[in-house]
Image (cartoon, rainbow, N blue to C red; front, side):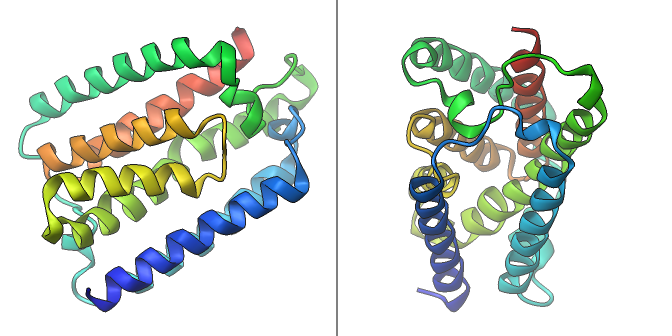
Length: 215
C-alpha cells in the first residue's frame, strides 16, 4: 500500500470518526443552521482544512492526474449516467425518506422559510452547492478513487462510495449517501474525469436545498 493511500485512508477514517463522535455528543443539529452566518464560517474553515490536507497528500507534480482534472471521455455518456444517478437517488429517497428523514438529521431542512435570513441561507446554499461538491469530489472521486483503482475498478467504486457516506457522520442518511457516492464513483470510472461528478453533486445539493424550503 502506497504512502498516499495510507495517509488518505487514515484521514478519511479519522474524519468519519470525529463526525460520528460529534454527532453522538452534540445530538441532531437545529433545523435553522442554514439561516446563520456562523454556519458559513464553520463550513469555510472545515472545507479549507480538508482541501489543504488532500492537496498535500496528492503530492507535488502528480495532482492533476490524481484528481482526474481532465476532459471526460464522453460528455454524452456522462450525462446518461448522471440521469441514472438522479433517478436512482430519487427512488431511494422516496422509499426511505418517510422512515429515516435524512434531511432533518443533517440539519438542512428548515421548519419554515425565514425571509429575514434569506441572505445567509443563500450564501450557505451557494457554498454547499458549489464549493462543497468541488472539495468532496476531489477528495473521494479524485484522489481516493485514483489511489484505490490499482486494486480494481469496482473496489475503488464501492470503497470510495462507502467512505464518502461514512465521512458525513450520519446514520439515517447513510444508505442514501453511500448509494450516491457509489453512483458518483461509477460516473468517475466511466467518464475518467472528476468534472461530471462535480456537476451532478452540485445539482443534487442545490435541488435538495430548494426542495427543503418549498416542500
